[in-house]
Length: 193
Image (tube, rainbow, N blue to C red):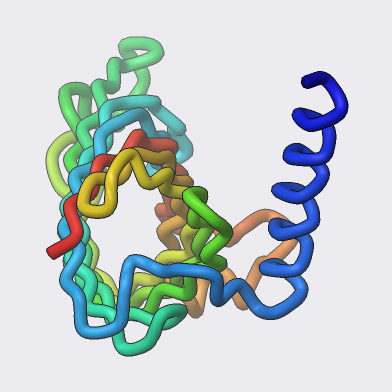
């Protein structure tokens, strides 16, 4: 039995390597299928020389163009509490809210039941609340994550996102820009239909 288990493990690892080398086309969430996902977790925002942590959430809607490529729309937001560091601090205290509506593409590396993916999106981002100057700006988001097929229609996973202003990132790439940007780490549940 021990040898049979080792052979089975070696076969699964070989299939994984072949799938990755072949461009990840083993089995995807699907061409001409819809996927809706809910995300929730933590994130940080850099604004007014502060980097408060807070809660982050989002909804992702995807439509599979092929087994690997999907159109994606995301609606996300975060909430961050900030306080004054002293009586001389002129920055407002309270809560900072971010909202974003983004459109883009997702590429999945479909490997057996585990589906790693990368995404790129662009859209409108709002910063409001306890900020010196509320802003609405054009933003982009880079994301990576992985989903696990619990069943053919239900997936669970994790996602990591970096939301930024493109012109700002290009002006200071080593420091990831100087204007507001955010990082988030979220858990994700999805339904494919």
